[in-house]
Each structure stands twice: as structure tokens, then as C-alpha cells.
Image (cartoon, rainbow, N blue to C red; front, top):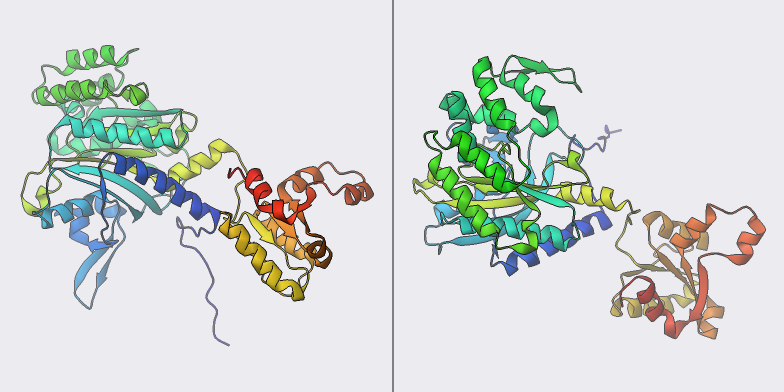
Length: 475
């Protein structure tokens, strides 16, 4: 007998079915409508790219997070995209005839060799918007406002969009005496502050630390104490208002070589954002904000849910003025942001606390009598034409109890029961499966339960569609 293959999932990957997939589609549709309102147009690029396209000439730490392989047939090294920004840069560099600024949105799966965690997977969906071909801070402001608009239209009032400027961080490191070739690894450590705290940052900048969860030793960068103190001093800047916070940053960094352009762009971006009253109360300047990707050159931003800080960034991005040039040599400014679709969905589920359906189906039409099959098919057709997601039970000779169990286990909210008597009288029976399940938790008298049948009611066939639409909130 042939050896069987175990149906195992790769760690950090998942299967999804039914309503979980539908919820992702709904979220994507909401984001798409918002982004098209802002004038962004769709783009699609392949999942597979050349490895050097993804890593650059010097792979660095980014290369350790990419799934790569050698394809012997063509003798090329390939990789799975880890974001949608690098493929965009490759596309723009290879299509110089594009009118600019070029505004695009794109959604699809990306892959990273990350440690799986709450809302974090190795394959996940992103939804990006980008503006390529303008240095104006108006483009960055538009990205931030579009992010906030998506969150608002998803019904999320309790979110915060934090933003900073990579030039502000670079100036802080220059002031602390950090060499230029250490800037990127230092910023990646700073980016972990929300997870490991100030003392964890200090330890990783210096001798290293022991991870509290895994017990693994995390190597430090070995910076001297005076440089670490200078970095920590900057990270401890705080104030009650953005005006006061920016004033402190200017006071600390205003005389640092290379800070003038960054501070000017901070002032410009604040001015543009201040005109967007609908979302500006949720947008906060945060000088300690650092994003780990090494291609950011200007403003950076990320959104998080106030009630679920452990989920981290659900949207994030920034300006990357030099990414296109690594393909074409052309200095082409660009800025953009990405929604972590799966992480946002996981957070939305946790926030709602609701029991989620396992299917998109609204109603199951049960099959009581094989001779009545044409009538069942006619009924399910009427429900579908009336805008409901309806299915007829397909397994022959199944008992009614098994059919109702099928509906309950999939999370179908309603089941319609029609036998020969009901057909003749023009009356149908509807079972509200969720109401029946809730009532069953308090049942003490089985005989009374059978007699009362909670969650079950009868009504004329002619009123069925309207009543179901009302119960499902479709009117």
C-alpha cells in the first residue's frame, strides 16, 4: 500500500474557508472604494520576482526574511515577494512612459520568514497605495488621510496614526555620534521599542539581552554607552501637544548637520494634515517612531488600534525616494502605505467579540421529500433572486435533524422546512438556529422544550422572503 502523505500545514500558513474569506473580500472592497475615491488606480504584479529584485545588490537583513530558491532549468535565483512596494518600484523603473505622478493601489498575498504570532502569519494579504513621481508633502498627507478614511469607513473610531520622519531619526543618531553604517541596524532596534521596552532597546544597542519568551540570546550592536545615552535621550522626548513636541525636537536637533530638510518637511506635512479636520485628531507626531525597512527616506507612518496595542501596526508606510533608482538610476520620489489585511481582520474579530459564521449562506432549504425536489429548487431560486445567499441541502435521504445540524455547525442562521402538508397549506416553517441555540443553554424541561420549540415559527410562503430579509437586516 502506498505511503500516505500527512495533510499538514506549513508553520505560519493557514487555510481559510467560507465567511472568513468573504470578510477579507468585504474589507478589501471597502479599501478599494476609498482609494479609488482618492484617484488611485489598480495594478497587479507577479508573486515571484528575481531574488536580487527583492533584496537589492546587498541583501542584508531583508534577504533573511525572503523565501528564495534556485530554478535550475533557467539557472536563476527567484523569491516570493515580501511586500508590494519593491515590485511597484521595479514596475515603474521598467515603464518610463507612465504618466507621473503615478497613483496606484494593489492587493494580494506576500510572504515573509517571520516568527508567527497573534495576527502575524508568514503568508498574509496586503493592500497598498502609493504615489510615485512627486516630492511634495501633499502626497504624503494624502496617503495618511486615505489610511484614516479606510479605518473610519470600517467603523473603527478608536485608532491612532503616528508619523515621523526618517531624517529626524538620522539626525538624532548623528547627534549621538552613531556612525552612518550603523544607522539602519540601530533604527531596527528602535523599531522594537513597543515590544521590548526602553530597557530592551538599551540592551540591544549595547551588549545584547536574553529574550523573555524564548530564552534565546539576542546579540547586541555593541555601541558605546555615550552613544546609547544620546539615543535614549532622544527617545524620551515627550510633550502634551504636537506643537510642543515638534518644538522640543527642533530645539534638540535644529543645529545637527542634515536636519534642516527633514524639519522643513515635518512642518510642511503638519500644515497639509491640519486641513483634514475629519481625521487630524487621530494623527499624532511621534519622533520615536521607526520602521525597520531600510528604503525609507522621509516621512514614515503607521496606524494601530487603541484597544489592541499588542497587534502592533495594522497600516504603515512612508516615503522612499531612492528605491526606484536601484533599478534604473533615476531619482524618482515616491511615498505609500500598506494595510495588513489579515492582521486587521483578526483585530476586528477580537474587538467585536461576536461569534462569526463559518459560511456565507443566509438560509438553508431542507429537503423533506424527494418528490418535492422541484418545489425546493423553485424556493431556493426565489430566495436567491431576492438577494439572499441560499442553498438547498444536497445529500439525499438525510434526516431533518442531520440537516439542521449541518446548518448549525456551519453557522447558517436560518433553515426553512417545507413538507407536503406545508406545501399544500402554503405555510412554511422557519428555524432561527442561533436563537434556538441560545435558548437551549437554559432548558430544564425537555418536554416543555419540545412543545415550545424556541427559535421556530411559521408564516405564509408569500411572506417568507420579506421576513428573512428583515431578520437579516437586508431592508
